[in-house]
Length: 229
Image 1 (cartoon, rainbow, N blue to C red):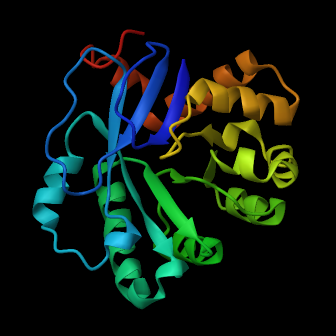
Image 2 (cartoon, rainbow, N blue to C red):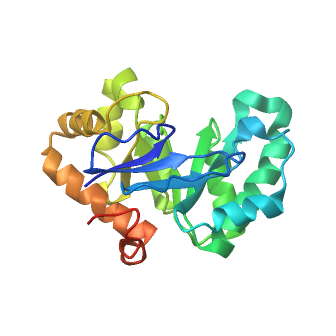
């Protein structure tokens, strides 16, 4: 199975792909089909000044097919709301820890901040940096603090840097995604495999292992509505 760990595209065209579709915090309807579609729900840093009801949001996160909190995080390109972003991010971390669901993180020029918060909160649930676009050094720092990295458009926009990063990290910390690109996740796998100089079947197997590890394969396998494994 291919895993698209972060996407905004709910369309289903491949039974061999598991999607984790980002809902934001305003959506209250959920896919009820027989394809492997899961959801994440979180408050994006760009929405830091929006009004929201944390009690309602907590109930959304408790839904079985919402398997992750996020995307949430910190974005220094929106400096005017950075304090509020930080406040909301801490709430999302708290939800992740109490509900026992992984956290999908939006981080723009804030990798060091994310690491500091990870150390301060002593969070135990898995954290995934989505859309990683940093240096091999930043990747190593994040992995040393037990974060996972997810790659998408970076593989196409900066191949030289992407090769260095991909070859510097263990595949056990790797995910791939389409985000808002409109790409097919299988194409992203093919691109990553070419940059890593490995077989796509190897990459598919290893990333599916990562998915099973942090999203609880045994529990999800019981949800016949969503999976046909």
